[in-house]
Length: 240
Image 1: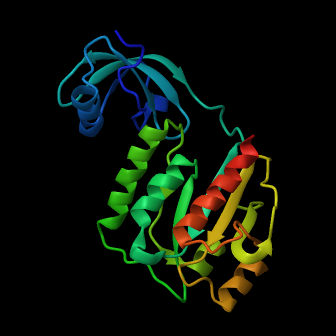
Image 2 (image 1 turned 180 degrees about the horizontal axis):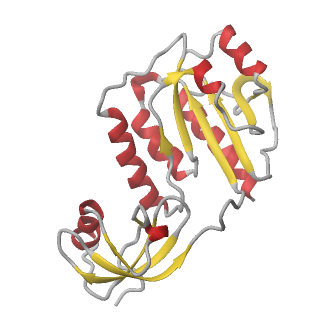
Image 3 (image 1 turned 45 degrees about the horizontal axis):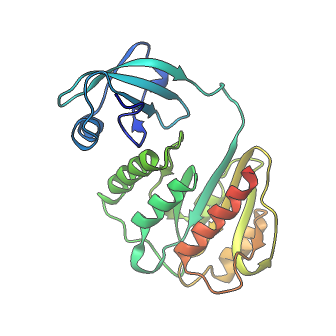
């Protein structure tokens, strides 16, 4: 019997409130039974995407796998942690799907697309649902305990007025500070990434008025999606 039947985490919302047993969703059941070919008695690791982590033992297979919770680790209530929030303008070719996957792998917790003067997102009723599915897939693959929250596009001014109090805020800018060290403390760090044509002067003034510090992330010109990943990787360095 393998130590873990699934190489990736399972996503089980509500896991932190469960006591003895869980019933997996059809999607997670298919992954465990069909993709991983788990058998009764095999074990897998699951998370609720909110910090809880559990070892499950498969009791029965089928369209809804039933499993016993053998161990369950919940995060300490209200325990501070390092958290990243990205505001992102529309890149060329609207590469939102790719951004969701890669930012989730890097541990970003909130991804907020922003509407800017020089570019707007192409967004339909099915876009958010697709992004949420990709967030779940990235959570599984990266074996993280927290799922990225993906939001529908919103105006920059509206988003900038609703950020967490006390957050360290940075704006990607080729003329910004080079070599700035990422914050190593707990709490939120927010990054603002312009669209493919960049923030306009009014948007830069708005962000700087809300204490966003300009930061240069490369000695070359980066695309919007590359800048977002560079910022997330820069932030991640602060975790040691």
